[in-house]
Amino acid sequence: MNFVKMHGNGNDFIVIEDLNNKLKGKESSLAKKVCHRRYGIGADGILLVRRQNATIEMVIINSDGSYAAMCGNGIRCFAKYVYDNSLVKDKEFDVITGAGIKKISLTVDEDNKAFEIKVNMGFPEFKPELIPCTVKGENVIGKVIKANNKEYKINSLLMNIPHTVIFEEDETLISEGNEIEHHEIFPERTNVNFCKVLNENTIRVRTWERGAGATLACGTGNCASAVIANKLGFVGNKVNIIVPGGKLKVYIENDGVYMIGNAEYICKGVYKF
Image (cartoon, rainbow, N blue to C red; front, side, top):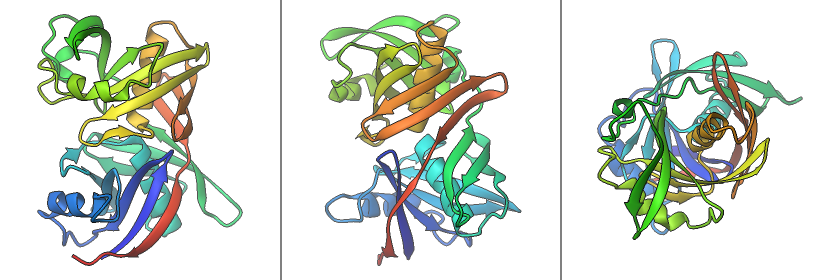
């Protein structure tokens, strides 16, 4: 099996073409093997390249074998891969994901390779039943929960996938995300973003990802964090995000939340299984 390993701000993925659906039913076990950082290639997840009719499709499986509807860093890697390898011809194209169709816009270099990827991530959902979250009310903004023998003021939403945003002066306590991820109010678990506001245009984010643990970056988490920071009046609608793996821009517009960043190749090879 041929593969390419890529990363978006340090969030790494194994990209595999499966245009003939030969890996159907094997995705979970394959992801566990190839993503293992001792016995496999090592990654936060795999990205399978498929098609539905003429439209390219991205299927994401986390390193623990669980399915993910969407991944912001993953879709930037995916978009660069399919364009650079001529699986799509246009600089603007659609990608089918588990969270619906995402619109891609690329900026290319003099060699016609994508170096900046802009993704319309759609709109956030705040209703608890859509996240899903068992908290009663119109939203889950400023709610207090107990975990890790302490209290957290949480802000939860669906940004393609469930996210919880917590503003802390010390956003490095990333391991605390594990217990919050599995808190009883989240029947499908949640991603957890620890944020610090640096100024009116910039926030710093660390993310504990559902199904992957602490990662160097999370695209949907960055979008969720920017949306909540904007909703609470901490930042404007154009937000710079600093994560351990690099930087990203998020624009909150009338037609959706836009994520803008790059993606990089790490290596390619053949995996035998």
